[in-house]
Image 1: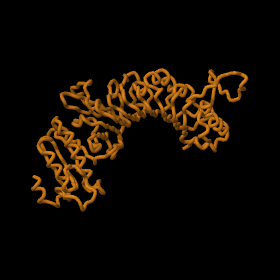
Image 2: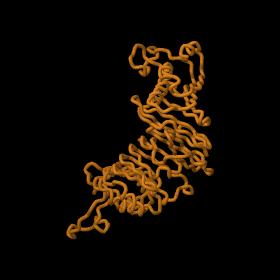
Image 3: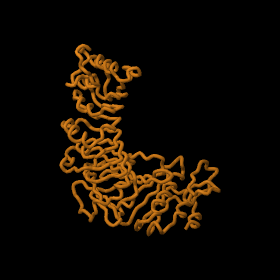
Image 4: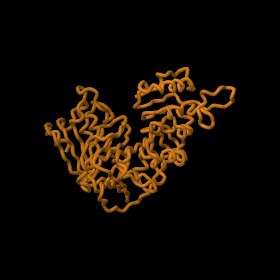
Length: 420
């Protein structure tokens, strides 16, 4: 077939129906990559077009591979790596002009697009498809991460043959959507539904190889209930943007989610964050607009999260005159604090020295003999988003006091407090 394809150099679209990944070898697909001459590694990418060997079908703009089935085997991941190399090598200055897609007979409505190999994969939606949920997976190879994305129709069960993926992104652009995974006898499926829930396939809920391999998880406007009760052994980063309030599951439905090595989370719903076990957390972002946030923080988040390891906190939608003291009191090792809010004097006073009763002691004399404590004594950076202090003159004296009593005031000035 390789010799046959070399007879049609003007070919622009090629669609192949293939029985399984074993039907065509890696050598066949390697013929579609642009390679340097006289090299031992067949995957070396081009650096200069004048030094390359012309691949099969040099004019090809679309390669579509339709598999009857996707068998289990050690060569599957290597084959995906070759697909990423094809994307990275073809027209490196015009990568969007070449497309490589996979589809499977068991899910004819789903098509998976392969992206070029990347050093780092940022999970972001690639396209907008009304009435669909977008899914992006990332598979790590020795040469980088290969993105695989697709638009999944609602109210359907879609096979997921890429169980070795380490990156998972789910985005709902249509309406509030729920997602559930099932796994039976080496066969994994994802069910996405809106109002009409398809029948659940037979499942082994405790054996989800995708969850065991995941390192990065991003979800936006998708019901996060399917995360509950699972252990993500390798998860390092997690971002969950909650769906509309009317579609949020009841907090009583959440159970503990184990993430033993996760260091960075960005979660909107405090009830969901409260169920995450985070012994290694270093950076956290949370929506603080929930009316019961202080109670949730003290009774649940502070229990399940190792706050002594937290060095960065991003407080989103903080109430203008909310009391920061109950939050900051548990963050003795915090280095960077970012607050998205129009802060008032009540919130800013939390950064001043205070006595055991939480009262600012700046005006007390030393003769009173009271010991004053400073919340977040290691804080080096305070950033306020969405506020211009020049428009609120009454805050200027408080800001100066904060700088004067900073633990590193010799290297901090009023200009060192950042406002965006």
